[in-house]
Amino acid sequence: MSWQLKIWWGYNGESPSPPFNEAFNTKNEGLAAAASVISDGYTVSSPGEHHFYPAAGITHVSLIDLGEE
Image (cartoon, rainbow, N blue to C red; front, side):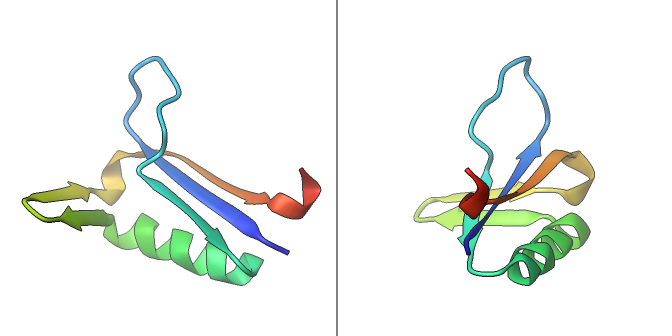
């Protein structure tokens, strides 16, 4: 089975794409990744850009079993 983890920061009145959106093979892998982001925040780096999403700004976490859809 596959699991989809999505984590959102802030709220602007809409449902924007979450900065953290990854699939995992097992529920335990998804839970471990969620625990890591919740404790340390999340960083996205690309050439010329660096974005840090602090853990304190998390507003919503979703771990969905893709086999149930």
